Image (cartoon, rainbow, N blue to C red; front, top):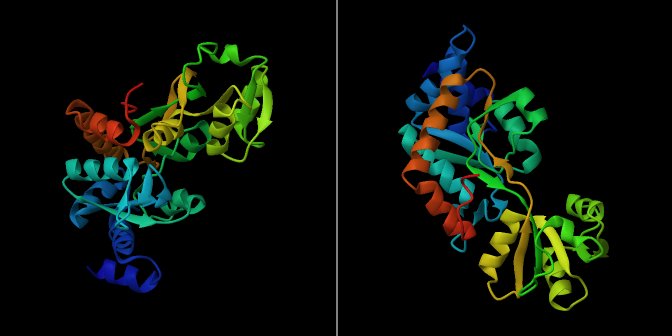
Length: 270
């Protein structure tokens, strides 16, 4: 325990649980046993620490009782249970989440971290626990738009700087500027626009909250990776344990159940 006490004194500003992780991790990670040390220490501590925003619904947010919840939070909690430990969450803004993994403030992040090429150079990742794709949203009953190619010449309601604006232009649509997705829906239902492109997960969440919005998903792009758990390089045993946990949660239907709870359909498989 001396290491932990030292770490707590040295890093007083860090949350107690996170500091304990740092202190324990320091015990055995300098001698080549790093590949197994983090998982061992997580089990010794009885907790795995995830960084998360807490302000990013429906993935990580506070409910009406101010309880931290969301798809990513519940998946992380279920994964921790499979590891035989508790999930601890430390809330932080997005820009500091991966830095928290670097500094050993967190063991991982549960907040829609996409394993892109740049991040893979710096972190190892668990298997994916959610997939997404681009979708074209139209007025209910619209049969003109069945693929992204069909938006050519149509009026697309998009925010000015989004990648969806660029995608719509690349497919030959005329842009109707809006400030957010809710305004895009209003433009479609009022007839000022024919379509809006956006992320499927965001659209499913919106339709779940507002089932009578008068719009539908008419077309989808290719499915792409949405999120996995980032881990510091070299912690192979932790990656393996997370993957085994996710595989079990996939097999027993937990991920499907959580998907349907938050999005109305299974987004945990490709």
